[in-house]
Every structure is written in structure tokens, then in C-alpha cells.
Length: 277
Image (tube, rainbow, N blue to C red):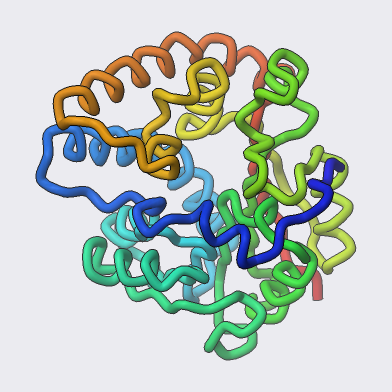
């Protein structure tokens, strides 16, 4: 695996997660379009998680770690059948999930989450582990919170993808300094096994992340999140044009990202794992 060295302190990292890092839609045209786009591409994640829940068919809570603004849980709850709750270390994110998405959320780390052991049917971590100083501690905490046989769904960037070979240090998946660790498939599987999980299946394509990641590597200043993090000043009109150009670039990246995923070299890895007794 690849580790960032030297690692920044938590105080240094704070500046790279501004309050508007977690997208909260407002009343502008650009915000409305971005929210519709986010809903569209999140269906990929929903289908993966719903299949895991159907295969297991156990009652319990679905906990999304690193829930951000809560859109994924909001959509999962809208489809019925799941009791959802979010967790994020950011108070701004937890507040956005509660107030905008209507999703119950707590501000905490997973290691100190206010939930009873074996209270969760499933735990999801989409692009969380690469941000952590000690990812094994989060997986150990997830193991304790899951029911016997409970499902853990994890997604991380893939350090063995074609995009990394193509772009090198400009690959969006490195995301220095926020990504402290970048995993290959074998690294992630080994870590999950070490923490008491049995890997059930992998997915190498994400409609939300793979094409968008390539578009960001090609034109980082068009990425809406990058612009929020860098606090780029722009008029509503210029913002809308940049968003439209970015979406066009995402669409143009789709064929390549589908091909690399078909060859098991996609820019993200999504894993379903079962808690071993």
C-alpha cells in the first residue's frame, strides 16, 4: 500500500475540510442540477448495499460512517425497509444530515460511537478508510457493532488502477494530504481478514466515483468539490458553466472507466464482507 509521509497533524488537516466540503444544496440552478446528478449516480451504491441486505435478510440498523450530508441514507430510507443512521466526525456534516436530509446522525468517531454492541445489521464506509490514521481501529469497532454475520460495505480508491498508471502523481485518488493511505485490492482484503471479516464480493466500478475521478484528474479546477475546498470565488453563471463542462468531461471518461473496471483495474474498489463469529 501507499502511505503519505510525513503525515499531517489533525490540526493541519482541519483546513482541508472546510464547512462547505459537505455539499448542502441551496436555491441556485447549479445546486439543483448538482443534487439531481448526485441522486442519479448514487443508485450504484444503493443497489450494492440493498443486495447485501437481501442476501442476509436480518433486521437491524444500517449505519453509514462518514455520512457527510446524508444523501445516501436519505435515498436508502426512501426505498423503505431499512432503519438508517449516520455518523461523521464533523459537526457540520452531522447537522446537514439532520436538517437537510432528515437523517438521524451523530458526531463521533466510530471507535466511540454511542451504539450498543451487535446493534447494526450493516455498516457502510464509502471513502473513509483512506482518510484515517488507524483504519484497523475503525474496522475493529465495526466488528463489535455488527450482529453475527452482519455486513460491512467498504469503498476505497484503488492504488493498482489504470488511472494511477496513466496520471501518476496527478491521479485524483491520491488526494494529498487528505488521503493518508492508498490501498490495493490485496491490501484491503488482508486488512479485512485481520479484523475478523470474510470477503464476499468485490465491485470495481462506481458510477459516482470512477468517471468523476478521471475527470478531476484531467481538469481539477472544474471539480465542484475541489472548487469548494479551495474556496474559489465565482459568479452563479460561471459556476453553472464549470459544472456543465465537468459533467461533459465525466461523460467522456465513462468508456475508459468501464473498460478498466471490466479488467479488474477500476479506480475504486467496493467490498462486501461478512462478520465472522
